[in-house]
Length: 395
Ligand code: ATP
Ligand code: MG
Image 1 (cartoon, rainbow, N blue to C red):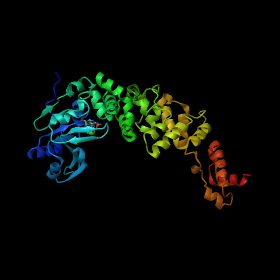
Image 2 (image 1 turned 60 degrees about the vertical axis):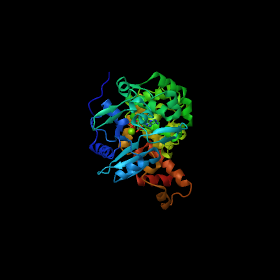
Image 3 (image 1 turned 45 degrees about the vertical axis):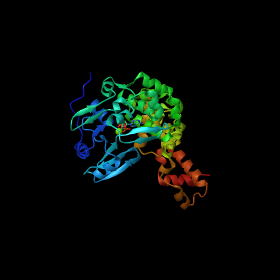
Image 4 (image 1 turned 180 degrees about the vertical axis):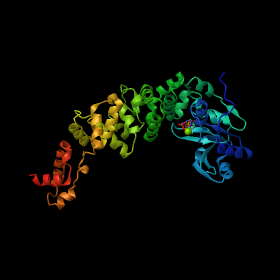
């Protein structure tokens, strides 16, 4: 039989809030992800954002504490600020009375166990009482945690039907903790994967980004998205033949997505990503992925062609295992020597060309392009007087 530790470290401010709620006559527990994480033991310091679940109705929570913020009042969540200004979430025990697969309508006045029963996975449905040092684990969360198993609370098909986001959460938690998804939970997730099409793009995007940030191996996360059938709906560009991701030097979501999906701009458009995310991934998709040779001149021309995407493309090339490619070295040299690879880096600009009487109108752009062309071949030409002389000689 798995055994709970005698206690886990809970920040003093959280215990103080819990103590006040109980002094007012309302049972209160520490719940959710922080409890799971403390039991997993991979955090060495006490968790900071321990969520509290309480029998106190939201209005009472708001009266009991000096400074509160109604975070999600219709769902019973009140933010309580401690005397250092840190926010702690206090949520009234609740039951879901109606869902349409996305939005829950909740009802208060229930017991802790019922509140735990509406949570998604057994490892997320445990509660700890830091004053009595007691535990509440009605669904076998501890055992699943020790067996590295992700299992829905209750009937998985029903739970996923209530809220399709739980399917994506399952994939994220499995990849984050390297857990196996329990067979009935997996079967329900795969059979309802197509229904994730009803989720909003923003929620799916958030899950993908959180998943990228927290997965032990993003390839594992991507594999789960593919095998569950979620990728067929939301990420059909996913390619699992991408090289292993132990070379990933960052979890930048645009880069990681481009590492696993080509083209990647359609992904960010589908996800309703920011203009910056869409633009960046368009630059990556446009490429070319690498210069045709590692000659500095070819590398500079490629940098001029790819523009703002050059650094992203270089990072992606390194992740593909081209870490020793000579052109990456050559590119670093171009940057180090601050050689011009765009018109903006020329030692002369259009206004100056016009003031010198050399060009006006559309010709300004043509002259600048020709100057850049020369500088890409020979960086030593990038000096104001030389550029002016050259511009004067142009037909
Ligand atoms: P993370 O470390 O990602 O924050 P977490 O477990 O704290 O993990 P949250 O999204 O912060 O996840 O949610 C807090 C808790 O609320 C969860 O542990 C779970 O008990 C419950 N919960 C969150 N989202 C859902 C959902 N869609 N369906 C059911 N329960 C949920
Ligand atoms: Mg959380």
